[in-house]
Length: 450
Length: 165
Image (cartoon, rainbow over all chains, first blue to last red; front, side, top):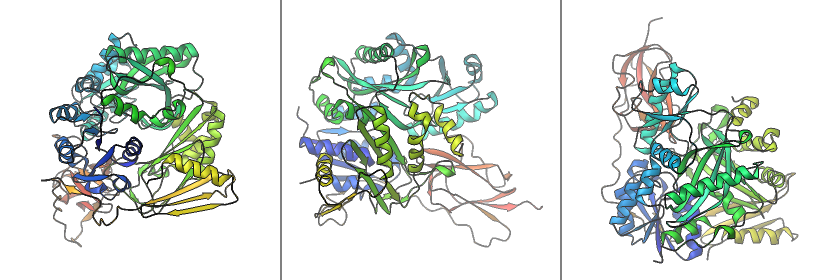
């Protein structure tokens, strides 16, 4: 069916992003906003706004009844869940089905399988992908046997999680129980599911992920992204393609991702994440993110595609519009996430009133943001306030373009990580390309914020 | 009509080839300023102000969900100048949690003895859990916030009776 009205059950920059595509396609956008966001920029841009409930996420953005109710009340054909919140919640997908509303995303069954990160590991193994040694634990105190077997350092991950949230690194056995308790609390707060699992920690790995797109029959890939610059498992910088990967390895990673997607009859946009040990030509499945991702712009820049448009087309029942050999990837794209955090105070989140927001503009530059002067950054949600993206013919040119773009960025009223991003872009280590996930901690230490 | 990002890029391209250094465009829907950067890197900057929809003090077509949020009731405030008690305040805005995870016993209770580094609660801000420590040795004499209550920076979480030195 042709989708004509979409309820966007999300906020911030992704709500603005989805609305842009809706506008271009002539689709009416209805924003489902919490009380804290009814005067936000996305609310001002939407064709219609409906209040979902209180500022706290569980009263609004995480409230399935409120979201589906809002869609029914406003006559929406479909719900776009964005990323985070209910984007990968099978109960929302099911509730949509029951209400006769299209869920823009995979099937409830796929969300269930892939949302359970342990189940996802099993599916990946069944599809022939390598996974890191690991296993489930039921409660703090129960993990020490498994942890001893896997060897320290150990990574604690949320079973119902993803996106780096609810993850903790444990170096010593004595820290395990408290770390598990805190990880479980974060997981409960973020996903409503406190279950965690342990995985062996690989020190010198790169985070390389593949963008896949499927129509429930066929799956194609749209290249990979390298997201190795992370702080506490939160991505800071992403790029496409992954620099310096040997072609055979790159191709193998693509094929593994497509193979898994095909085995699942995957529907919609998804990302298969891998840990890559480039010098060993080895890669391990980490998880599938069954949603659009924060860093999707770098793939859009190198492919020339509108991934939100592709999502909507597939949700409306259309088959894939491209064959694999029609996918053309060119140039190099870089994205820096700008967050409202005080880097000098251990990245303390800095919600508050934006007094001024000046962004770069011009060919090859893209800014995805929801903030402007006069906008309040609320404390109830994550700290991402803007994404600065550049696209040039090659990586050195992209790096130079990003340095210039960041220099033309000025945000006043809240502390941001802008200075840190600028320093990163000027760092010789990053310029060399292909850094591992251990890079950023070292960089921070050298900056004096370690 | 709305300006798309592609439109803005095109305008910047045209401006760049022109003798102009700044463009300010204001409609009843938005205000856009494009300016040639004076920094060493060159390039252009953009600044936008998206205006609320016309004639909507409360926003366009906003409907409230029935039975939505109930405002958290403020906890009873401790009396100021409470002879000899010290306040533990939150440095961050967010949501206060009294225990490490739902169903777990609270970090402290009335009468608990705490040290400087004793964790007395967790503030969840932007999905991150931040431990709050007592800051001094003493006894918890008043707990001023409820579990899962939103708190503002500087808000008093608890009052302690400091230990005699």
